[in-house]
Image (cartoon, rainbow, N blue to C red; front, side, top):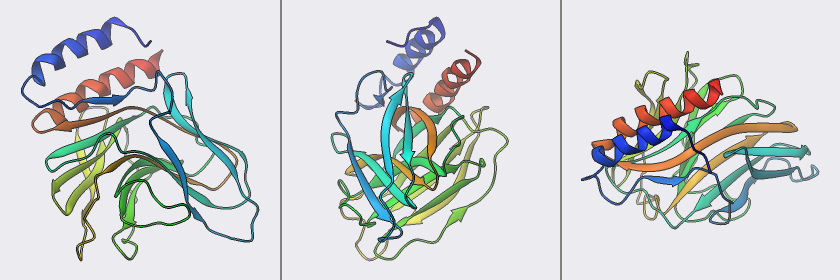
Length: 241
């Protein structure tokens, strides 16, 4: 179990702040297993290339991708369907830094577990190993690439559902400042089912470790800003330790 007095203080404060926010909050602090998730390769860029050997794993109470053998560019989703992202709710995960041996890692929101080697009906926000933040996805055709800025500090990534077919994607910095990278509108009725799966995305382009992410949570307004700021403090303390 992860235990320290700072986290306990934060939890006590949030128990008051979230009292009227609904039965939503921390989904996973990665102190257990990944049994609630389904891991899926959603892209093999070169069908003739050898398969990469990659797996999602928990390391010291946070999530990372471990690629022991690199065969070619591949993309992955790690999704769960026991929680959903509704209108007015925000999905967040803390970025703890480190492990930059591969390309991208971030958040994924989709329409159920993806079909293997198929990219369809999802959106994502992710941090590249050089610190840049990007967003992409599919609503039939592939959505245009958004973002590209390199923030001075990065505490957490978020995807907020502002309407049935509209999402804000971005990040919080270490001071709790919220920045939107992209606003995505899912067109042509393709929003049906999106939000029924939440989790993580990775783009692997080399052997090595990518991550870590921690404290996956879904927060309704007006609690989103409060919890994001509080968990930023937890993440900063973990970095110092």
